[in-house]
Length: 363
Image (cartoon, rainbow, N blue to C red):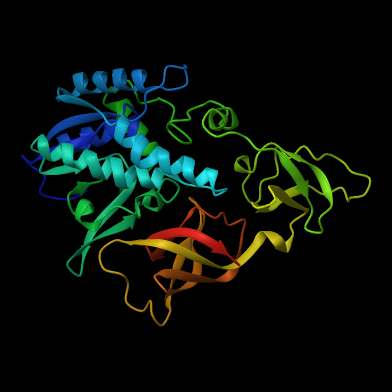
């Protein structure tokens, strides 16, 4: 955790979960003046949204720690800056990752502005990540607990915002965090971790998406053009998907599982193949809208050798990155399975996160 926090006012994003609650504890232990800010980013009364319960948990934590709690509603900004993008990407047949935008636009965007209005010198969150000054720049590093590391989702946050941010949990593992919460009497010590996209919650994904985007059913075909079934809408499927295809056994096909390998948007056709086919493998991709933490890395013009992830929790993959007409061409040392257009490729040099870009095309 960043040193010299004693007597400094820190505005902590308090979600109502165990991670941010323990972050508050650790900041207090370091002598900081901690104030909590709870954000409401989604309003829904259908029983799936846990915003009301989370606010009550945040209040209980603040009462236990005797710290002020502020509450702000960013629902409008979230719908304009994150949810609209989410829908547009699915409408275009892509697979977005709204958590990356939520961090950039909300948690380290409008939240940061609100923290300054509250007199905060620094802001803090319960993310599992670390920062360090390297060559005069604030660098984003992986968390010590690689199973919980969230640098992938933070790669689009500006260096200026990271320079004003404290990640108290960066050196801890999840089990340690829960133990601290239990030992210090926090009621959320055993609260279940939130999973998936915040505005969807525990509801079926297809049910949620269909309320905003009309489904357009079509045929499921093999790469050779043989129809083997019907899909309920291309937006519901991602590369490598096996479940939910409802193709079943066919007399004219082997007894191997079917996988989504591509989408033909013009014809509204879902393309599938059987087994671990090479059609699921990609050796290179083109990525657009790069976001670098600090200055772009040296060597992009001639080819930068680094590591990358094309999805969260993937092990680092060796690659070469080249600048190409404002975009990035990424060539992998070994083929990558089921790369999804619309997701993010994130780059690393050892434990340092360099930045990332949106996957636009694969080959």
